[in-house]
Each structure stands twice: as C-alpha cells, then as structure tokens.
Amino acid sequence: MQLTNLTIREAHELLTTKKISSVELTQAMLDRIHDVDKKVKSYVTVTDDLALEQAKKADERIAKGENVTPLTGIPFSMKDCISTRDVRTTCSSKILENYVPQYNATVTNKLADSGAVLVGKTNMDEFGMGSSCENSALFPTHNPWDLERVPGGSSGGAAASMSASLCTIRHRRRHGRVRAYACGLHQRHWYQTHIWSCVSLWSYRARIVFRLHRSDGA
Image 1: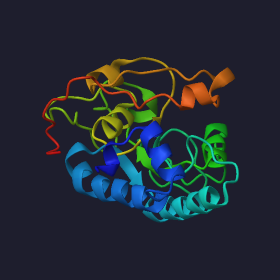
Image 2: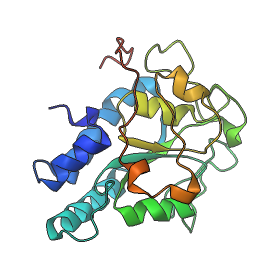
Image 3: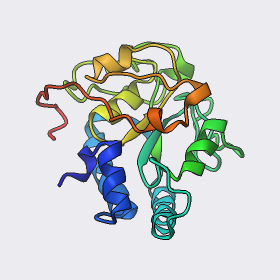
C-alpha cells in the first residue's frame, strides 16, 4: 500500500480502524518530500519535527476516540502566505525570508483544532503576484508532470505538492484555477460558511482520472 497516494477518505478509514498510524502516514509523506521535492521544489519549508509531534497527538486522539474529525492525522501543506505560529512564513519573498509569525491565521487554528498534520509551507509567486510560480523570489517550482513546464500560480507550490503526492490536503487562497488544472487537479472551493462541514472535508483528494508518467520519477 502506497501511503502517500491515499485520499482523505482512505487515510481516515485506515487511521480510525488503526490499520495505520498518523506517525506512519506522516513519516511516509516526509520521506517522499525529501526524496521527490529536490526536483519539484514545491516546498519552501518542511516541518519534520512539528509534523511528527502533531501526528503523535493525532494518534493519541484517535486511540481515545475523542473529537476525531475527517482530518485528524491527515498530512497537509499550507501556502506560505498564511500565518503559522513559530513556522517561517515568507510569502516567497526575500523581504520576509526569515519572518517567523507569533500567531496563527484563523484557518491554521481551524486545521490544528481538527487534528490535521502540517508537513510544510509551499512556494508561490512573491506576495501572490503572478500566475506561474516563476515569480517566487526564492526559487521557481516545477510541474511534476513535466519539469520543464510551470505549475501555474500563484499557488504553484500547493498544486505541485498535491499532484506529486507530497501531501494529502493542501490549503491556499481561494481565487483562480490555473495552478490546479496545470498540475492535473480539479479544484473545489470550500466556502468559509461551510468550510468545516463534513461534506466539504470528506470529498476525495481530486486528481485527473487518467495518470500520466510524472517527471518526478514516481
């Protein structure tokens, strides 16, 4: 079983039936990130220690059966313009290259409350200004289906991380579908009024129906 290819539903069912642990799922995702993302370059920051700590807490939560949500123990990536306390948040800009927020964005708190596991912050066009992820001041992100092509933007790192199976969920800002379609994904909007409803969170991680040979070698 390829843990990094699981959908939200599949991972949740395996976690709640204790066939796998969140630590196992998270470690598999981190291992793949360190192996594959050398080529794709979708992540600005990978949060190994934090992710494993959150995964352990998720496993404890599942073991006790307390407040288990569809996202408990599920690895996710966060676009690097969204504030994460004690985790570098650069907006892919040299100006904020070493900025570490002292507070979380509301969506970060919501995901933390759900028990989801943050594996890293993804690359983007600097301050969201662009549509190809070539305008990151740190480095460009490549399309995992063809490393010579762009992943779209400004959330190119988020789309590439999902398409390359480097996270189970990715969160980015709402507008536009360029990066999703460029990386072979179908984008679904989770509107704020029902973002935490089980209907929205229970949906499959979307991918194109037919699979091509990705240039990331996986």
